[in-house]
Image (cartoon, rainbow over all chains, first blue to last red; front, side):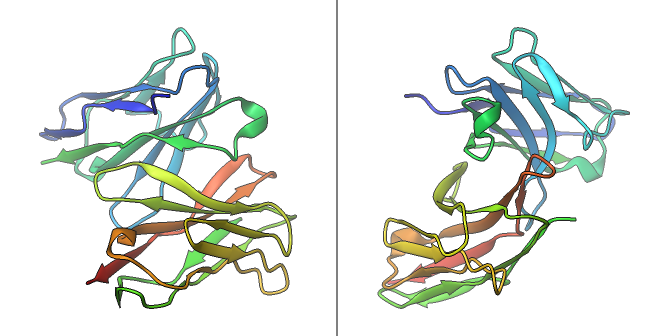
Length: 115
Length: 112
């Protein structure tokens, strides 16, 4: 079974530029998460989807961050414009369903560097 | 709010040494507890879990016991290998918030 796929793996951009990250969850997993992991820290939840609905986006900085999961499968996280403090690893994870949120499978992450 | 605190790293051990990584938590109610491992260049992988007090999670020679009285979930392994070198994250599942909350991670380096 294929795991969670993320791309790109690495991205370097200048501040004020836009950037987008893509995630393909494990097949059949209805719940999808985006996390941000700052250097030397644990992951912190940005947004959680149940199918195509964003059910928890309380930690997403909505002035510059946006996310979508149009068909309830793949998801895209966007930052526009990027700031220096956005440099981090962005992790995508998925769970079989909302009843098993404690069971999360993580992708390898996208390492973003903003210069 | 709910939180997880891990011992600071890096932890450097020789091969076959005994490993302990301390983890304590603060939570309302009775959370489920987890250890995740992140190998270089890879995503986080669930290593083991415990869902109630006195439960012992185990996997690949690693163990951790859910201690409600001390609010702890320390990770142990009797004999580490070079291949165990990674970052280890303690986490709790909070039913109150519906979130997986991670500690800051502890880097383990095992030398031959």
